Length: 120
Image 1 (tube, one colour):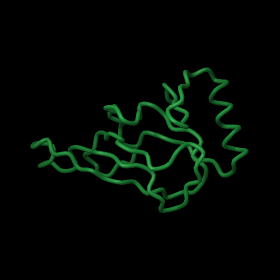
Image 2: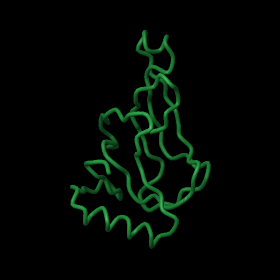
Image 3: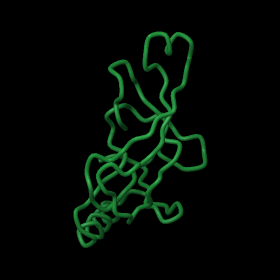
Image 4: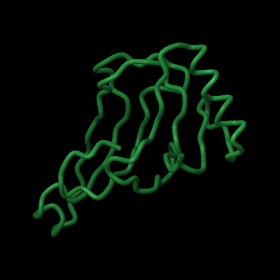
């Protein structure tokens, strides 16, 4: 989760614009999120700001980590918390996905995505 302010404690990813397996280029829009408390005034008045995150790297979107669940009320993700993993090649992406499956986390498909229930 992008930490967009020193006072930010977390945000909610509301929409992924890429699916697992997609190639992500630099400056591609990766996800949309909502954040509260960007400023002291926002925190006092409970203001929520909608933002978008552009990727600063490129690669294949291999894994998207929970607690990001589309079309539900996603949990708050702490600023600076990893939410996805990019790989350089398709083969590397498949290897990483296989490694996560072998480690034993519960994996449940959400559309074409691999979603994990714990962080590593």
